[in-house]
Figure 1 (spheres, one colour):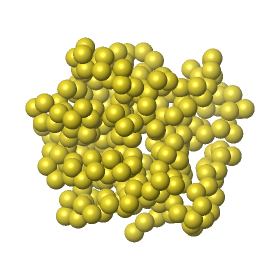
Figure 2 (cartoon, one colour):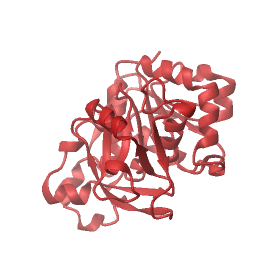
Figure 3 (cartoon, helix red, strand yellow):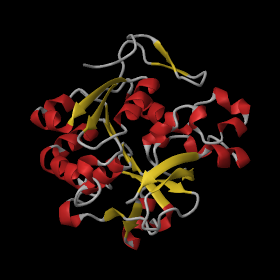
Length: 290
């Protein structure tokens, strides 16, 4: 069952004075869960606050009926520990997607669907070959990876982030210029929670990502040993976006760890986390995936 506000309504975003209007047809967002994922409700809420109809589907059900992707404009792969992260983080879920759904998802992207993978979802996108989207990055031919943190520890904290202004990613449009000065440093933060979030790629691959506008997000300081502090990348279309930080945990200003110290004048604006979801909804609105 699709969950939504009434068609034709204005959806007010909690904690802001922002409202997003989409006429009579709201974009459909499908969030894929499986054993061990634990951030699907937050991701569903992010899509709903941004103005999309939402539906949660189990990976097994989607494999049995892949046609459920045909009328969808937005797809989300949430964080957590899919299948207990046995073998490696995201590996088993990625294997199922690579063998049974990857071609269907690529076809969806080609017609305009946007895909978001957060934390474990990012790991799944990389290991299933959907990122970085070079055409040969599947199986043993993968050209990027997400390895264990150099600290050898699971890290769960808020970190400063920097959005790349030259990125082609539709999810982060305008965020690099949204705040300036000291306000940027305090506002541009996202929570991380991972043990295997170290972005790994060779120099030629990193240069290709940079020159193609596929580097989307960096942490302000090195938090896990990632090459060039990269924390998020997109595919060449800009529609498939994977990142280790959790934007769905920053949908309201009161989620910020020091929200009482933030400039009150900024509270009438959308948080960076919610803006990511709004950008994607705006990108697919009026276009349609089916």
